[in-house]
Length: 364
Image (cartoon, helix red, strand yellow):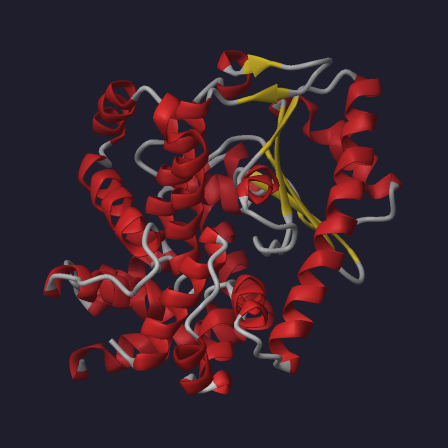
């Protein structure tokens, strides 16, 4: 592990625990490298707080924290207004992920957010679209997959989920009828039981980890939630349900790693296996990387099979991605052509990165 990686972990731990970092460790850090790595893992705002406590002022980190504060304030206000409209219209909804987790961090702004995720009654997808368009949002995606993305410049970004996971994810059926089984709050708001929220964020983390990887912030999220709720959680239930989801080993390994990473005031002593795993989180970044996703796929299939699987999706997945193909199996070829055109004209950078990763796989 690089010294920058070790310093990042140490400063994140200090930030989460409210401790003052060792001035010498902070002063020796290459702040430019540290910022790039922290930004890649969506931890720059949190590290900014730790550096300030150590008496170190850096423009990039200060800007990251100030931007995080502003964006969270804007997203929070907008979320409250949108949910107020949902109440008026009788639409069941449940805030997800960061909009819940951010409140468990020690200070506002520590947990950066790029968007707000809300689970909605799937039968209300069209009325929700009308609400969002009426508020000046543009529908970046609608009717494809398990969520619709709405954007209002310059910084507002909302994802309205009709299901927690797309059908291609193996444990998607486990999360059928989530809203019906959730705890009721005032009005039409719903919430997970604490145990189920922990299971959900772990399953969501695993989904990213198993495909393109996931970053260090995922472990910080789990640490902060366990610290807040852990003593009261029913861990027997969590372990039983983790087994049903098929993520038992991942849940336990990640939980132990998160606690080891952030519970102390010093950089922990890792086994070689643990250090390699931490390196994987650090190098993946918040949302993973194309290279890691390709590497995971090519570990158990040929390059040709991988390319063909990308082009010729299973019919059910194709119907989610290209909705008009759901009308008839005869429309499947048109869906394939449509996806190719969409990638060529709208996702050239992603296509180039994917093809480059496939080409270079043998060199690793």
